Length: 139
Image 1: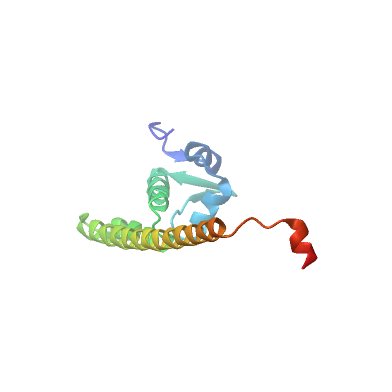
Image 2: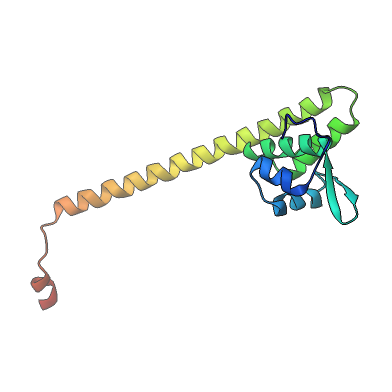
């Protein structure tokens, strides 16, 4: 459908195209990321919404917050050139990278601590002779 010359789309068509639920699309709509027109009670999405949905999903895959995504999309809509949007995107990417790097450091520290406890437990087990259940019960 993305390559389809069609100019409007239903919520069902968008959901199917992007492999998401209609509820997800409505959620993005509630957060100001999409602004479909209405024909009666039906939502009608245009090419602008399709592009914004595609960029939103890409941003989410990168771990960018919906607030940051909305700000970038709004800048894009208002800007005469892409420099402001690219600057904002670069800042969002930097923040996300820094958060992931911190998470990686935290995970490495936790793994090192787990390995240390595992080694300590193994050493303690190697030092003690095996206890028999009968001897343990007698005490």
